[in-house]
Length: 318
Image (cartoon, rainbow, N blue to C red):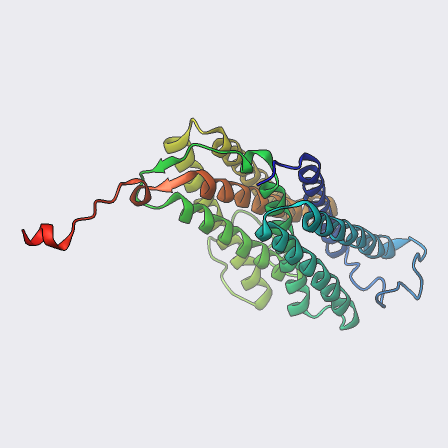
């Protein structure tokens, strides 16, 4: 296999960062209720560049950033197919390109069909998947991934590979619940925090309250899994920097996300804070995926590490 292409890796990192920026800009559209500020698609009021005023600034700006990320992804995919020797990495780039195309189509359908909840949530969910694909390509093209590494044994009861994968999955589910809450205008259905109408459990449930409370409840599940994962890494693999560093980043993302979630309620959904909350959730997902990938790269289970002794049938019989 050829050595790492440092410029390809740097470009992949840039695409992933631009995708995170796109998530933030998309969050601005919802936070400012600008989803239908431009009622047509793919043009905006029949123009490529309409007057950037009011909600048009957020909605058309989102389209421009999305188009830029799409073009960057095309270049990344072509670059991978021309210079990357590993077929599975090239295929991953092709999947990322397919995802960004589908994302653009979902964005158009969202506008043309007047923001149906199912399509809007799918649009948000696919954005997170596309971010994960970008992060994965950036990781797989890095020098630290491709260089030979000594493997470390996982001796605890629950597999660290399974734990990190589960943590990433529960964070992704939380992003979907957050999107459902935002696209049903349920963000302030429960106006206080950390309690709900002064209670641990809301005294009554409407659909918006149910969506809001589900997002809050699942946040506890997310916090539990992140703390469990980070604790395992610190206690069992505290000397492995490639695991400790992303674990620290993930823990910091959790703390910031809790603060932003609370501040979103306390500020009555201030635009910038609310949008940062969305972006921080995406960043936490990316950090968890980063940790998961490197755990799968260097950690082996106790069963895999234990040498297997094969006893022949004749020896047993003897």
